Image (cartoon, rainbow, N blue to C red; front, side, top):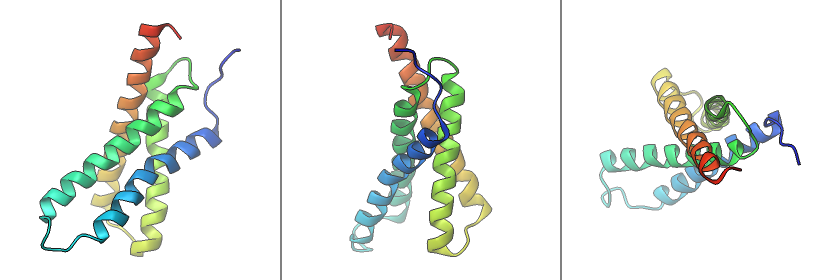
Length: 127
């Protein structure tokens, strides 16, 4: 069976998948008492969750690709960013430019890393 490049729907599904981990983390963090965890530690964990969510989505979307894994990862990261920005705009009624650039960087780096991991695994296993 011949594989094709990922479609728009697959990139969109990757964006929602990347954000599912983020939304689960936000829900779990809301139930922690404020004095239980330091804000700096919470920011570190939230950044790590965004990268891991993007990495998983980038890996899964890149399974459909047969070339240009970095571009597939970047597109998946942008999709995750757009979904996150839409959710954040609804919840926070507008977000800052710094937040937008930071989440864009984290989603794109995570999904690109996941897509490159898929490329490396594909080269080793000769998929």
